[in-house]
Structures are given as structure tokens and as C-alpha cells.
Image 1 (tube, one colour):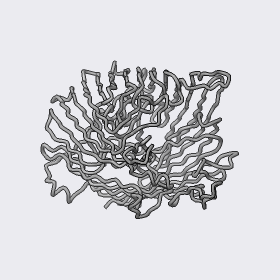
Image 2 (image 1 turned 180 degrees about the vertical axis):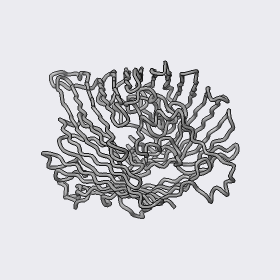
Image 3 (image 1 turned 120 degrees about the horizontal axis):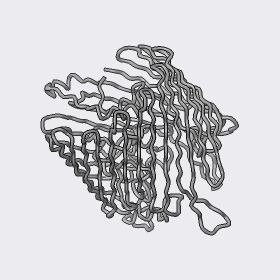
Image 4 (image 1 turned 90 degrees about the horizontal axis):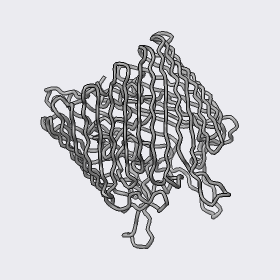
Length: 598
């Protein structure tokens, strides 16, 4: 098997985020040969087409005939049909080149050729062409690309794992560098040209990007020069007249540079990052108490440096950055093997309230980069060969106001889990997590809002049992509570999985029950899905969920995936709201995918 990124291992049965994170320090993706480029272009390692179809069988309100509003006008409806269509073409030889194109139509979007509304066939296109390892030229990419350097304060594209069951490695960003972008997330960071040149120990990366983003220009006068954008839309959907009108109204022009120096033995690395962004329309958020330090204007500059140092059994890393506003950010930490049985990590972060970074993904608690300071400790202990204990504690504070928090606030997050492996066929996992944060409490008898702690607790028990080399079963029970101002709500879920794997096919099935008091106690659970589809749905109210996923190898060149999933609620007359509303208590999803190796 050939892969471009370690995160593609998530597509392989048996691999999860935890396993991939453990493998990252031991994996180097660099396939080079002396074969001339002209010759290798005739012999790709990957030449495939992936086609995907997804739909919901029940009719949503957005696809029904429009009503007449009180003003006598027709109400809004979706322009297209309820089907999601996806196609990806890839022609690649790792270490040499990669050429690819992805197209997608979301549910509700229309396939049409309408230049005035910037719609050309399907709604979304992504393209990349990459040549690499040609002497001093390490990489050149034309089209869509990602960048990862440092700890994500300036460049941090891709997956942000965040806090979870892995308490040690999750705090560190891995410098994946420059790579092609193949996702269907439409709010991509960069599109243009990027070049990486150099020989060890010195490497230089430069790029130019121009991305069209969704936004609705506003103006306080009739002069178009007074237009401004209050916020950038990131959902990537163009179904209704309003969403279509917002499509690609904002131009995001970016120039960036990275210089990094590595020692011969790669024990020490230091790098410099620089970024300049310019919009064609100024950004000016609607002024609220909590967003007084948000970015305002046409341009933003970012600069910073980072380092990595490996010393015996420890890895020290960090990054510091400053934005044009003067706001600073620091993300630093250490990961150490204290013994063969104990691994530990520590992380410190401080992001000023006026630090502005649009494309970063550092370790954090807040939804945005800024207004945060925190200390994190992680620990993994293996007291005996078949028992592993994992735990972390994250203490953080927000020095300025936040959305729905009208004062400086603080919180903490604690997790503890144990994994016990009885033998190769049976293992158990139990995990407890509690999180406390401060939010607004509105008391009609008090003139001022109070800030009170909101406590959330979650725990789960998971058992995996392999009956034989073909059949395995998993059982999971999870529970959550939310306690705020002496009002406690709970949520519960029970899931049973069965997996059958043979040479030509694999079948995964699940039946689950859930019962929650409200949306805040909703239950999250990972679901197996089509190749390259990552699914962690959330369930609330009361009901059952079941799915059947089949993967069938029709031939060496053709693989088929089929998934049927249905959620049936108890006591509901409608599912969802607005144009996504479904009349009734059942939602059924059908997913089909085929991969053709050429």
C-alpha cells in the first residue's frame, strides 16, 4: 500500500487516531528512486477514480413546494435535489508526483451553468498538480495545498486531533510541511502555487494563494467603497438564494514563507514563519462586548519562529508568533519517556486576545485562536504488560469575554482511562471525563448577569471480543451528565457492533439505543463509513440507531462500499428544524461508493 500522509492510515480497518498518533514518530513518508520523471509518469503507483453517492430517503422541508409568507412572497427553498455527489481522480507516484481533481455537489445544491452566480456545473472543485524530489527542488504544487510548520500558530492545516483518549502525543503538532489538498471541506486555506527548495540542513518554502470565500458585503451608504464584511461564511453550502448570493464574494490573497534549519541527525530544528493576508473588502464584525479585539481591516501580517529539540528520551518543542495587531501567541511543551512504563507530557499556551491568525490550528480549548492561557499535563502508565492507564489535566482561563460569557472566565478538563487486555481476543476499556467551564446565568431578579460554573461528566465502557480471525464484536455503554445551577440533565447510549472480515468482503453492523434529556447531553460515537469518510454523529432525544456497512472487492481493480443507516426516534413528530426538517420520526441514509483502479 502507498500513502501520501500518515493520516491516510485512518482509512484502514483497525487503525484509529490513537494508533496513528503513536506511529507518527516512527514513520517517514519519502519514496525516492533514480527513475527519470518522464519514465515514472508512465508508470504511476496510484491511478484511480472514486465515485460516491449519498442521500436521505425522507423528504426535508427544503425540497417541498414553497409556502406563501404573510407578506405575500414565496418562502425560500433549496435550488437542487437532496443527493450528495462526489468524484475524485488521482494519478500519483509517491516521492515523484501527484495529480488530482475532486468535485462535489452537496445536498440541496443545483448542478447548473450560471456564470452570474459563479456556479459552473457542480458546486465545488479542487485541483492539484505536484512534482517533488527533483534535485534542489523538493516540491512544487499548483492548485490547492496545505501547510504545516511549527505548532500551528501560523500554519496549521489539516486534522486537529485535540484532547481525547491519547493524553501524551496529542499536544504536539507534527511538521508535515507542504502537501496537496484533497479534502471536500470548501473553506480551504490555500490555492495557488507553492514551492519548496533546499538541501539539508536548510529548506525554503514560499507560496502565493488566492482563495474566494463566501460572505455578504454590507454598506452603510450607497457608495460601494464603503462596503464591508461582518463575517466570513464557512459552511460551504449554496442551496438557497441567500447562500448562492454569498458565494465567493470575498477574495483572500495570501503570501507566505517558511525557512527551516535541521541538523544532520535531525535532533534539532529551528524555523521562521511569515504570512501576509489581504482581503478585497474590509472585515468589520458587528461590535459586541466580547469581540472588541477581533480582527478589523483589510490586511493582516504574522511572523514567528519555532523549534524542535530531541534530547535522549525527551522532545522539547515550541512556537512563538505575533500578529500585526501586536498580539502574541506561545505554544510550547515537552514529551518524555520517564521509563519504559511511564510517558508524560506538559504543554503551556498563551494566546493574547488581540492575536489574529486565520489558518492556524494549535492546541487549544477555545474555538478561536486567542484569549486563552492554559497548562496541560498528560500521563500514560503501563504498570503491568496488559494494563495501561491514561490521564490528563488541562487548566485554562479566558482573560477576556467570550460568546455567552460576559466576564473573564476559567475552567478545567480532566480525563482518566484504563485499557486492560486479557489476551489477543479480549480487551476492556473504561474512561471518565469531567469538564467545568463558566457561562452566563440570567436571573430575572438580578440586574447583572452572573457567571456560574457548568459541569459536564462523560464516561464509557467498551469491550472488544474477537471470536476468531473473521468475526469480532464490540459492546459499548456511555453516559453523560450536565449540571448547571442545580439543574442536572443526563444522556445515555448503548451500542453493539459486529464485524465480519474475509478476503473479498467486510461487513460492519451496529445497533444502538440512546436517551438524552436535551441537546447538551447528546451522545457522540464513532461510526465506520465509506473510505475517506470520517463519521462521528451526535444523537439526542430518544431512539434507536442501526447501520449496515459492506465493503466488497469485486475484482483487483474494483471495490464497492454500501451503507444503510437509519435513526428512529420515539415521541417526535418532526426531526430537525428549518429547511432541514423531516416530518415524522425516522431518518434513513443511503451511501454508495465505488473505487476504480485504472
